Amino acid sequence: MATDWIRKVGLSLTDAGGNQGQDLSELQIVFETGQASFQEHYPNRAAIRVWNPSESTAKRAMQEYQKVILQAGYENGDYGIIFSGTVKQIRKGRMNAKDSYLDIFAGDGDYAKMGLVNTNRAAGWGWKDYRDSISKAGKPYGVVVDETGKEADVNQQGLIPGLRGSAWYGLFYQQAHKYARTVDSKMTVENGKMIFTPLDGYRQGDIIELNSNTGLVNIPESTIEGLKAMCLLNPKIHPGQLVHINNKDITYTNVYDPYPSEIGVPPILAPVTEDGVYTVLVVEHVGDSRGHDWYTKLTCLSQNPSAKSVSAYGYHGVPAASGTDSASVPDFGSADPEGAPF
Image (cartoon, rainbow, N blue to C red):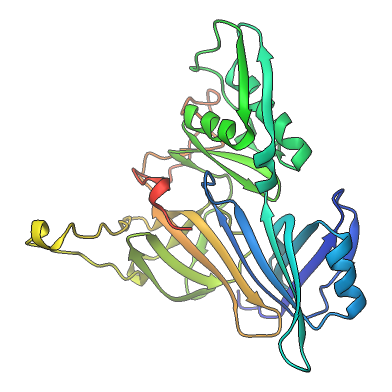
């Protein structure tokens, strides 16, 4: 992170087909994005403000474009897409006699809620068939299963196939989360890709080291919502990934309540692991290309030593292949995603 100080941001608006439209990267851009590893109720979202666009630029943005791609990082360091989604609302306004702004509010994959799964399968169907039917329903709305990694390789060993023919009918998101729960995983839509991660596992990729030399800011703290941490903006951090934080850097509190019946149940704080490895549940990027903010905020939960790597395990915890080693890093424990923040 020592050389990662020259900020770089990219903002482009495109039509529904993803064709290049307007590039607003040279203007001052302020943004806040939120992504979570569970999305049954909270789709990923972004709020972006562009300062002082020309009248023609603002007019075209409000009338011609439906998609937005936001990239951020550093000139000489990590740089990449931190949000890609569908424009939900654009607002043109003025702060004062001198400064005007264009606000862009966008969501990732939420239009797919209108998708409908409506298909029949003959006897002998497997869970991969079910997943493919869900993917087909989401495709018209720009949402498909991520086919680039092991997350897409549903292992059907150990799963009971359909002994009889079956009819599948229901809304896209309902069916996607039903499928995820059935195969012991959670589903997130990130930049138009459906990613399934095992409940007792994590996403592929290197463990990201977070300390004062790699961009850790302030003091991480264990809270009732999870382990809260903040670092300099890092586009490599995604929901479901592993991060390593030195336990000596974490503020942790023990709560003692001798009168729980009178005062109430003591808060349950997120546990701190011995090895300092945590799974990212929520990622929030906040930035101002010409201002102070340029941070990534994390909400994490501890892992346990028996966690299963996505690259080594199918969604049901069945070994993907003989000779494949599972990673010796930990997992979500018994946390309930429904109770997590965001």
